[in-house]
Length: 221
Image (cartoon, rainbow, N blue to C red):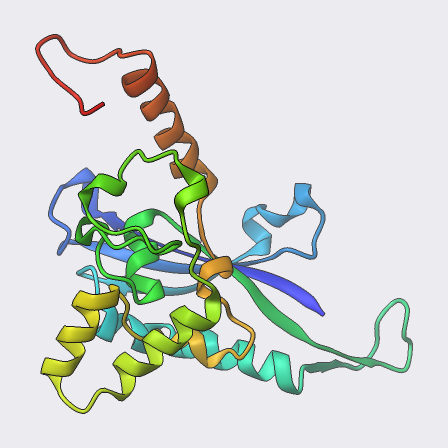
């Protein structure tokens, strides 16, 4: 099967800070290409531009309907090529969505998680503001994909908005259209993009370990 990665992010117009005056973009690239070819402009598909605002999870599910339907077909029936270099009489190729890459804010929206300020971890059972900066990994209980899927489907099937609010508060989880892909695991396939991850690591290293920050500013231990 051919592996693809999707990416989502939002961009404010002309560097402004108004999130309702910008664009969102869903792009897709082929992970089966060699690394030096994957990110060339001619090999990155701009699948959708979302104008004007940052969608909430309910709206975001509608925008992801198109790529999800495409990858559902790729997983079940695939696409037939009339001829390839290795198969002159043609062949059927299947393809799948290996990951969705985004920063932590976009990852929460696309993956059906509450905002990062909710203090619900999307990877483990840790909750509350004290989870920030914790390094006692041996005490963490990871969240398997089937648990996240079950919680998301419970939210989707809740009979009332009140019940949905209760489930959100308890688990920090809502439903995402991505779960219509039978193989999609929210614990594994929702990834933080390397650029933001490296920036955060560098920031934490300089401020929390080297203690380099503005004079008079205090940081938690």
